[in-house]
Length: 74
Image 1 (cartoon, rainbow, N blue to C red):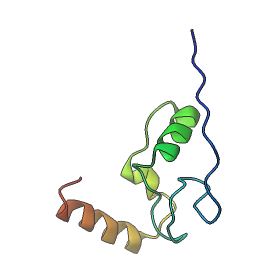
Image 2: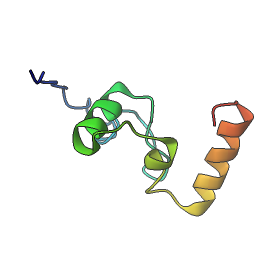
Image 3: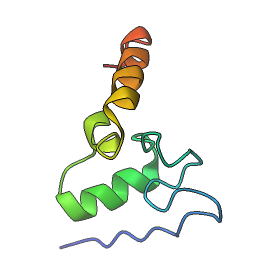
Image 4: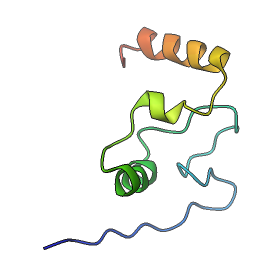
């Protein structure tokens, strides 16, 4: 039996992909439930930080990864 998951659209002004508020050049919020569910429904796996940063410049990726390392999250 397949269960259906429905999510409501992001609030106005939030990212249409992850439902968080961030600048377009910043990574999506990998921990956003909205992002996780939508990503899983499309790719049949949960997103990684690499997925969340795939649209970012190399400089933003480098800085963001360094901050994740500093916080012990990668």
